[in-house]
Amino acid sequence: MTDAPDLRCTTLNVRRPVPHLRRDHPDAWGNRRGALAAFLDAERPTVLAVQEAVPTQLDTVRAALGTRWRAVVAPRSRARAAEHVGLFVDAERLRVVEHHTTALSRRPDRIGSRSWGSLFPRIAVSAVLDDLATGVRFTAIATHLDPFSPLALRNGARLVGASARHAGTPVVAMADWNASERSGVARELGTAGLLDTWDLAETHDSPAVGTYTDHRPPRPGGARLDRVLVRPGDGIRAWVRSAVITTGAPGSQAFSDHAAVSAVLRWEAV
Image 1 (tube, rainbow, N blue to C red):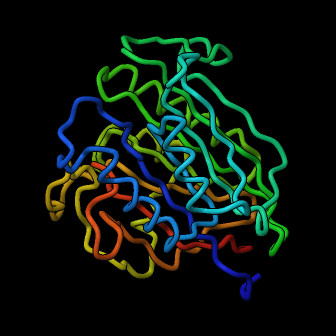
Image 2 (image 1 turned 30 degrees about the horizontal axis):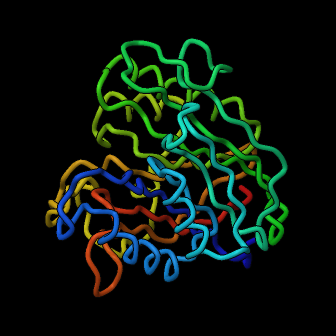
């Protein structure tokens, strides 16, 4: 297993299109689309978690990655232009064994439900994946926690943590957590055994900066709302080679108001 190829796990809040922005606004989707496609073409993640992506943006992601990647994404409600959360999986490396979507509410089986003062429905998408290169089975989780209600934020984190604890496999959980690495929510996730790959990484290919940029220069030491977390499995740990925070494609403007966060890791027997 020590010679196994690494997995590149990336999370990105794509940032839904906002209507009525002037054409030259940095947040206008028409100005960001090319930068997102260029980033994904260069990144080629083994597993990509996306948040806040509407159907037209998912089309951009699919086109940039190519047919080798399988989409495991779901809308957070039945609205025609609903935001989606989910995973894009390199099917040449990973086989999707099963997947499901859970509402982050008191009714986890009812997609579109809201609880705890949440203004919008929230979901988590998980997939059990077989690594065809190593034989390791692991679970990938993508989610986007609520930024408006502290109670919904905390309880959403608890539900994700419970899913990770009960997965029965190693877990990589990728999200816009809407809470910093120093928050009570981060401690809640840590209690569930989810570890921050930024802390585990042997090297960092960028400085530690805040991942919500709002199209401004990233702030050194700012809150890392977007994080890639791992939970070891029975006899298996995550060795994290490197981690990086990326705010834009090379030579291009930012692709979102959030940075992308990537971890290069492998599952190793202990």
